[in-house]
Length: 170
Image 1 (cartoon, rainbow, N blue to C red):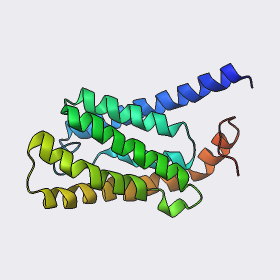
Image 2 (cartoon, helix red, strand yellow):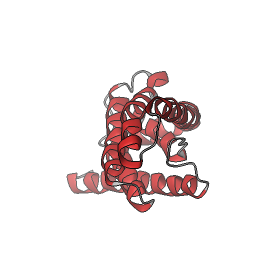
Image 3 (cartoon, one colour):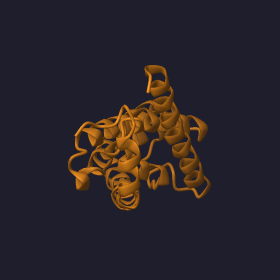
């Protein structure tokens, strides 16, 4: 596979992940659970995808950025919420040899970054309660839904992505 083809494949997969993130966030937004002090974004389950492929890292970041823009988030939420997802994705990729730790980085990144953003951008108080509710929402989204997704995709995703030129080296 030549370098151009490989780059196009990488960008296409990242774009598909971003699009899926946006659609799942929009669905949660329609249900009223994607933003605010209590958040359960179905899209956050996708944060386990860096366990399988590096294409998920830019895909998740761009998907979160677009989701926050399209759902009318405040500028600090757009910037720092997206950075929290990026940090979580990068750290998940680093921990990919430890399957059961895959959801921990996005849970921790969002639990630490999002509550102060909710306070500063939206005036959500008290801050300590936001730490609890955001963390619980991330545990549901990443820890429970994300791990269910990981187990469901494990055999087929490893097989598919192992054949890609940008797959993780063993």
